[in-house]
Image 1: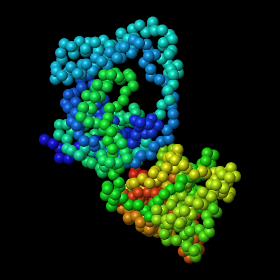
Image 2: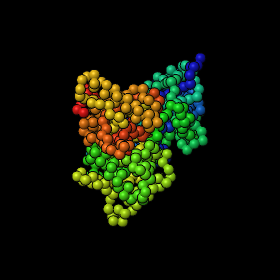
Image 3: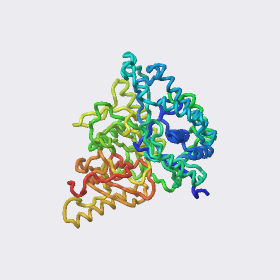
Image 4: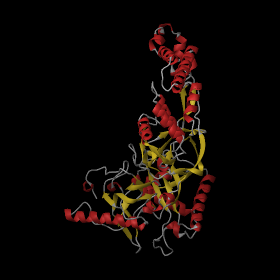
Length: 564
């Protein structure tokens, strides 16, 4: 009897991150976790009992005989890798007595398992003898009864501060979704599936001991993001005989000496979003390349409420080094001064938000270059940035943004992976159904007074504000959200209420300044939406910047309690 659906294993990262080093580079993190790593965790859970279950062994042997699984995992952001110097766990400081005892226990354990496997579980005289020897070796009293006779120098040598230090690295990644799945293209027999499910419940970690997990068998399979085949990803998988090989190697290293994981190398290819039902993924028409600048140390105290001021200073600095006439796709204006209707370059200050201790400070900014931008405009932008950097370098000066009475901010163009997660484009490019504002949305149409007037008038104003946000979504090429919640209060930790932001005004199509009402918004779409996402009239100057946040809720109870 077999299950109707194909077999899968779901792994939930309980801490929200995964810590494990690549097998060929100790400074890089492994993502997604390789199938061989999951299998080894299962074997460890099986073997970590006094009487390993032989039905569980048979289930493990069934699993290792299957073809490599596909993997469903989200994108992940790596943390900066730093070195740590930790005390060496060298058994030699305890003397040869400890080494000999540990080696004997390991050998006796393997011999016991082998005999039991050959005899079908029958306890022979040799097994009974081994169990007595193991009991004696593990008896704590015999090992501590003469503690008073321990050599003082040996005791001191065991203290961590007396041991030699070894450089270690603990690279980790923070995935967008803490849940991942391994998918086999075959149904599992019912008894095998139930046995593996019980075994998975005993798996507590994957990779480093800090990577706590909860695992289960599942038949509800998400779309695969990696599958075996010709591709650029190389992953370690298992094949028939993996369990026997793990036992053989354990007999050699005894869990006290360096060891390596046996594996078979298989190429995996990334499954593109298009292959995962492209109709489920929508992107705004402003999506494109980001050129990121980080604020230097000592200049990261600017709050997000000054986003427009910082964006305007960045815009002016780049325009100063752009050849005339400034292209429409860069300036955002036509030759007659009217605003362009096409997506153009945006200047987006990036605040620290979305985490428990986030405070909304601006850590840097991105120059967003839409994919639809012409090559001529793109090259004009690159030349302007290059000219600016060359001139400052020739004067041995840093790049600076002049903010009037707010002083200056020193910046530098980011090369390589950012140390701060806020400055990593992939954080803003996440795919999600729910999006919340990081900076308020400047509504394209004024809804009326949101916090004054009669209750009926306020209700109509809030309804018009919601309709205006929906219109802003459609304007950038997104579908109408299924749910819209607007508020004067923030939805995300670290963001500021609307009242903290200066009034936002810009030049309308008639050439006159127009002041816009601003609101925070939480949007839910029926389809998956990919960022970066900016909405509203100020989206090219840092307003209406959105972040994927599946579980966001307003931070204040009553949206009407804030001042307009």
